[in-house]
Amino acid sequence: MSEKKSISVCFTADQFDKYADEKSIVVVVDLLRATTVISTAFMQGVKEIIPVQTLEDALAYKGKEGYIVAAERNAKPIDGFDYGNSPFHYINSDVDGKTLVLTTTNGTKAINNAKNHKVITASYINLDAVATYLIREYKDIIILCSGWKGVFNLEDPIFAGSLSTLLLSSGKYSSVCDSLFASTQLLKNAGDNLFDYLSESSHRRRLKSLNMEEDTRFCLSPPLKSDIIPILKGDRLVVL
Amino acid sequence: MSEKKSISVCFTADQFDKYADEKSIVVVVDLLRATTVISTAFMQGVKEIIPVQTLEDALAYKGKEGYIVAAERNAKPIDGFDYGNSPFHYINSDVDGKTLVLTTTNGTKAINNAKNHKVITASYINLDAVATYLIREYKDIIILCSGWKGVFNLEDPIFAGSLSTLLLSSGKYSSVCDSLFASTQLLKNAGDNLFDYLSESSHRRRLKSLNMEEDTRFCLSPPLKSDIIPILKGDRLVVL
Image 1 (cartoon, each protein chain N blue to C red):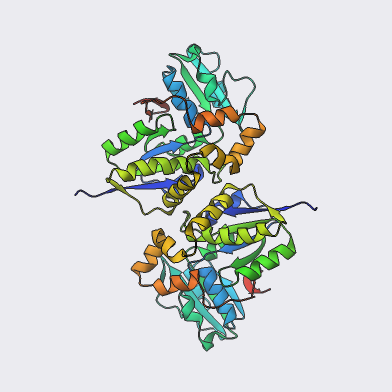
Image 2: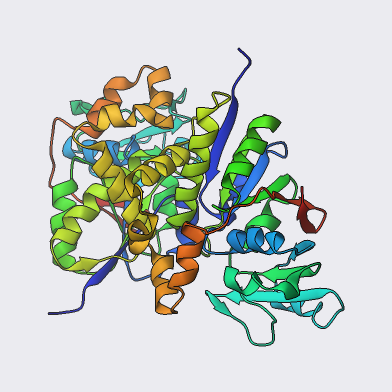
């Protein structure tokens, strides 16, 4: 029996330095909605995605041939950008073959904070593919929840619970991480209906108040599945 | 019906700046073991407690008339100090009337980070008294979990769940905080046997490996109750 690899869960992008070890694979999650958008966009033929930190960085690409620029702040799209942070924006043939430049409140920050590691992104769209990939890679894993402006959110840990459960059931991983344990407990309590469970969530309330309930349903229970694993190469996410 | 006051839960001392508003009452929790020690020491007649950040700061008081100095790092007592971080150390008549100078891995840091607010400390020893006091005060509340070196732990949020449940049941408080929701969920899952539930906890494993199981039982289900509420005045905790 070979040694088991470890999994830990970091609850916010800002805390990543407490977990960083420069050798683990980092799985970034921003379920509502950045990493779901990333999965969707790649499925629709986007060639690569450049996550940037600021609106200014994103606007620098505006109007360039072959680029589309997308931005979200505080759950809302931003004037002057082609796209926002709704997965539905990307289900259109115009995105095929393009480079997407994306800046969001939390998800792109998490990706950036982890950039000294091997970084992939995950959502319920590519959950199974990500688990299969990680089990095959057999490396220590940090699941990096994006959180909300430095604060714990409910939906990213629940997804971390889903991914952890798959990884632990392989028998190749173990964990001594309290936040992983809490994530699996929250997932267990959520049961079969994430949407209702997350009615308690601050971000779902935020999206509800913005009439984005359909986005939430899409992210929690996507109508499509993908084998695509987005991986960070240099400054951009590409298909593994 | 007057407006409800808010409660939020911060999972680690390091994240407190995301919650700080300079007007909420901050309830610091380091269940295993600093805030349990603080409750115990006051019950045994300690006059005041000076939480300090460094071993050097604590040692400066060593040998001074009327002072006892206590230190813990990585769950272990430190050579050269009179006391450690076990509540049992304080159940002796020598502490009566003394000033306790205390430095611990996480709890004293949490107290220090919140010092621009009204700060009280809580444990299962004074839970009921703290809840009664807060309900009477009727102010916004931040429950500050000390965590473990900047990382989420399981036991402090579970205590936060216990305190939140009492506060919310008064009808005077509400919460939109995902970490409070998660705390109440973890408490619910723990059910009647915190000790067994926390067998999954990294810190209980740490204490177990150091043969401190009795400390853990004491902190989770203390054999004594107290109405004393420790409150920070200047650089020291005193009895409210």
